[in-house]
Length: 352
Ligand code: SF4
Image (tube, rainbow, N blue to C red; front, side):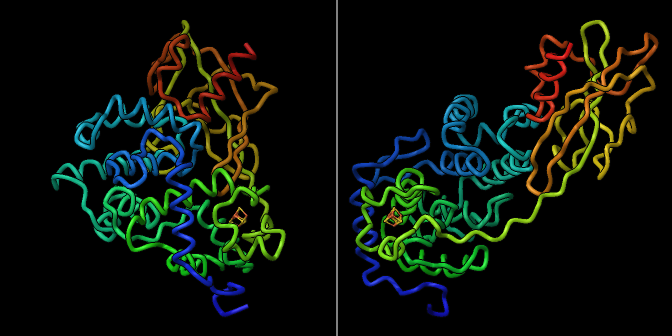
């Protein structure tokens, strides 16, 4: 193996992009944020789709994307949107920090009169990481940018037989991706690599016999390309505990606004106590009441830990004023609750 972690450099890098682009012209996925092969796309749609896709699948994003652009069809419309409406519309699409950054970036873009065109300027917008900046520069502006998402990472590790475990392999994967990225049509090339990874060079069972770049693939030639990229040894994820409080009176439930900073910041939510290493019981209850703990719990996976939440329910004391909003239980679907709290409400409803 050479110092880059690749078993051998690609014999003819230009042939990879040629064969891949020929395949893409016929097999490109039809996605609502896409333009046709050979054309550049709307930067707003590319950027929005990439942010939505960071934590959610294409199948889940498609209807959400279409509803979003029907409501906010361009960056100016999003820049003028109400913060709370945007946060509510984001529910179920992953971390709310992404939605907050979307708004900040939309306002910055609107203020400067349009999207910047270079990768470096795009990177300076709030929330645009290296990957998204490269994707927008390449796909929307036709710049030659090296775009590496998880699909591309997998395809390139196999094409070059890079068997260094992740994340150590990332610089070598980036160098290898750079080597096969064409000077023109880098946007189509990036989308073709994403499509190849999503439909043919899939994680568990790559369909190598259908692959347009099989002739160039060292992983295929060596056998067992599915073992690449080599994953790092798994560390157990820490478990944290908390309690969700369901306080009800006259068909309404108490909702609170979470603090701006921290997980699910600024979102409407059911009250919770602290999230700790051991179940906190009724610590942090919004009021003293006759709390009843349900047998069922809800769980939620964050990036760095799993959260297990007990459910406590009570009727509100008649004299209670309470900090928050009394929301009609029948209309809870309109509250824009994050998935975790929507699941808790559903579980509590089933238990009632
Ligand atoms: Fe992936 Fe197989 Fe194609 Fe190699 S030949 S890029 S392993 S699908």
